[in-house]
Length: 334
Picture 1 (cartoon, rainbow, N blue to C red):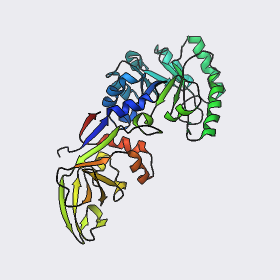
Picture 2: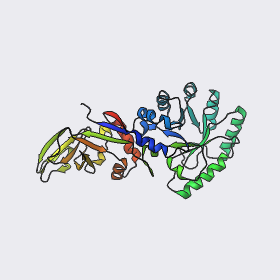
Picture 3: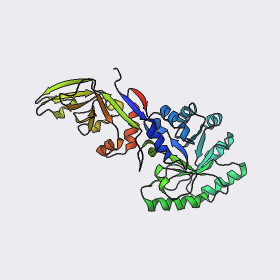
C-alpha cells in the first residue's frame, strides 16, 4: 500500500527543550529510536546543542557513532568491550566482574560506574561492592568518566532525597574525583550538584515546560456512507444509529496506534475535531465525519502523546515509542 502517512519533527521545539537545560552537559537519550521520533533525525538536529548521547545497547551506540563524533554512553550492561574501544563508545559497569573485563580489553578511559540507589535495575548497591571496586580502580589506575545513578521516584521529593543521601554515602567510597551523572529529566529540578544530565523524555517535550517535538499525520483515503443499522470495522463493535459518512484513515495498530484506543479518541481533519469509531484495524481506522470532509484531507492523528496515554492509562513513553512502526516518511519542520 502506498504510504499516505508522515511523522513531523519540529526542529525549533527540540532546540527550545534542550535550551531549558543549557547549564548542564546534556547526554540526550536516543534509545528506542529516539523515543519513536527517529534516531537519525534527532541526532542530526540535536548535535549542536548536546554534549553527547545516551543509548542502551551496542547497536544503538554504533548507529549514533556513524552520525556524530560526540560522546556516546551505553546506559546498560554490555560485554562488547572490544567494539566499544574501537569506536570510542563509553559504557557503565555495575559489578566487579564487569570492571575487570573492561580493564582486560584496555577500556580504562571509557568507564562510568553505576550506583543503585533504589531502582534495582543496574548498579552497585552495597558498601562492600564499592570498596572492592575502589581497590580495583586504584590498582589499575582507572580514571572514571563519571559516577552514575538513576532515581526511581523523582515525583516524590522525600523518597528522592533519601536516595540521594544513599548515593552520596556510596559515592564517597570512591576516592577519585570525577563528574557525577544523574538520570531522569526531573532531577534537574532538585538542588543536587552534578555535571552530566541524562536527559530523557523532557527533551522531547513531555515535562514541566517543554514543547512537543513530534506529531503524526495522515490523510483521508476513502469516504463511505453507512446506513442506519450497519456496522463499521471488525467485530460489530460499532453500529451506526442514524446513517452517516465515515472516513478511512490509513494508520492502524501495525503503525503503532494501539488497538485499545478503539472508539476512544478524536482526531482533527483539516483542523476540525471528529470522533473515531469502530475497532482499529492493522492498517487503518475509521472516523465519523460530515459532508465537508473529502478524500485527501489532512488528518492530525497524534499531536500530544499525553492525550492517548490518559485514554489508555499508560505513559507517553509507550505511545511515542510505538510510533516507530509508522509506515511513511519523516518531515522536518521549524
